[in-house]
Image (cartoon, rainbow, N blue to C red):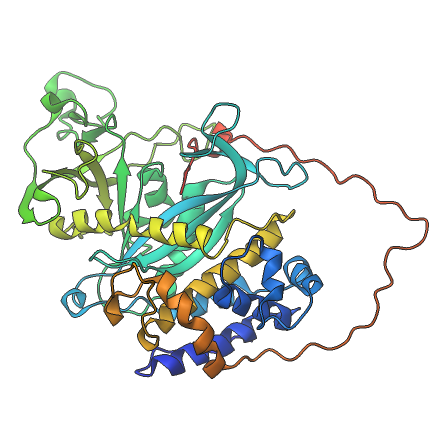
Length: 477
């Protein structure tokens, strides 16, 4: 049974209540799982995850660490409810802005793990296999709340592993629905920001945005060569001298051909200290031609999803490493809603704050370091990493800055996850632990005499199939 956690004016009390609720969300091997979580929060640099069993807060042997990942139980729904109850606190100047959520996928590389099932091939920007930027591994899709100002903190609310044969757009839509259902009702439309690789039409159809089934808005980056169409002119019938079926598509709009553009329906221009002159143009009531019928093998009409096409142009980049390119975005929300151009471009820029969370989870919290065999073990370790990161976020207001001699001092509200983790070992002494002490289990019986271990079965990595409607290779963060 999971306990409820509410945000209070006492940050230390909120963190203590969260730890008790996390312990209640664990099932089998809960004591070992919770001590592994504390070891992850208080350990210094370790060469491998098994060295977490040597941390003083981990009172059990290293065998319990393996047993917790192999046979432990963590209620995924209970964890998402706990995370939804603790949204990211916003500054005073963002109090009236809608909630912004970033959605992206990150890959856990398992290239040489031939005995690990459910691996797929995914694009990776830094790791290569056979000369190609492709790795075999597990894809995890994250949904995290971000702020409109530059920050190193996010609030992960849902992390789900997407099997290689599944549609990443439908999986993301399921996560969005759960986040929307659990967020507090504030009367504002939440905005979910996606990077390139996600299909806006599939997302909108899975969420039922055209019929208002999900009270949310989407902002998806598009490739520069996408084509869209306006609504056709009214059908004149035989009076025009032409018969046949009424037209479904009007004038064609090609993103990389300015001669096909018509006058924008809205425009916004502002001066930004980091990006210089920012110009956003919008073309409303356009739609993309869908390639698949709603039911394959039939002649049913293809669904039409209408949205707003945005063109973002900036004068410079914060770090002028390259010439800024034009960015095409697709906005779509419930019927009758429209995009706020001043908010849309800032929301997309802040989507990249999720990359800081990926880097911290992989480099500091050792998210992808364990060489587990089964994906269920990776799911448990991922849940522990997300819960550890959330505890660091809750501990930010109550810890002091412990900087290295060559680091600059930071204000309390600007402490980074790495600096908070340095002080968490002292905070953990005051918080205590709900986990019980270890109990002697006796000497294990070991392997029966005469029994031999058989070779583990091999599972080849699965290539993405075109039939599932998801034809992309996600870029690993």
